[in-house]
Length: 203
Ligand SMILES: Nc1ncnc2c1ncn2[C@@H]1O[C@H](COP(=O)(O)OP(=O)(O)OP(=O)(O)O)[C@@H](O)[C@H]1O
Image (cartoon, rainbow, N blue to C red; front, side, top):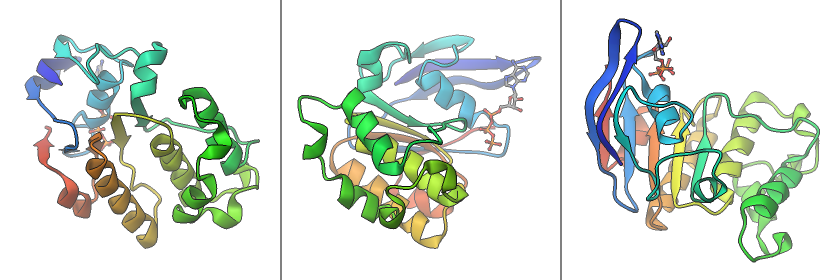
């Protein structure tokens, strides 16, 4: 996934000589203090930032978020991920599945079950603008995992989630691994370390 990766931040290196290998069905957790470079590394994995040195390969390609083939394989929830305030959770999922889904029609997916599992069943048809912070986070997470993908990149997915939301997240991560998907996740939530096959401490 990552070979000899280094990112300089001004005068110092955020990380250097970083080698990461994550197999299908494995979860890598990025840990470290605020400012240690977790989000920056995730941005490198999605092709939003270019490392100062080293190489990156995700889902068999050099990351390029402008490349639709790359976006079909790699789903993300980043620190600045957002949604359309005027669309409902259901419409978001339909939009994502229509854009990234395969041959299946959107109505063949079990959108109601996904929304219920995410605790958004009763909010499925209201404008996302009216959702609480935790409900918005659930919608963004759901958007990332509902669309077809091989690799999932998550930046502090636990943010704003309540106790049930965090349990739902841990179950999701577990289910993703069992489906053979690769997860790279930056987190400050210790229970998520339980689903990790590898933990990398930055900083
Ligand atoms: N080109 C640059 N020059 C100077 N500083 C930089 C540069 N790029 C990034 N930084 C700094 O490097 C740090 C890395 O931030 P990043 O968001 O990756 O950390 P993080 O581990 O995700 O933090 P948090 O836990 O707070 O989310 C930040 O302090 C940022 O301001």
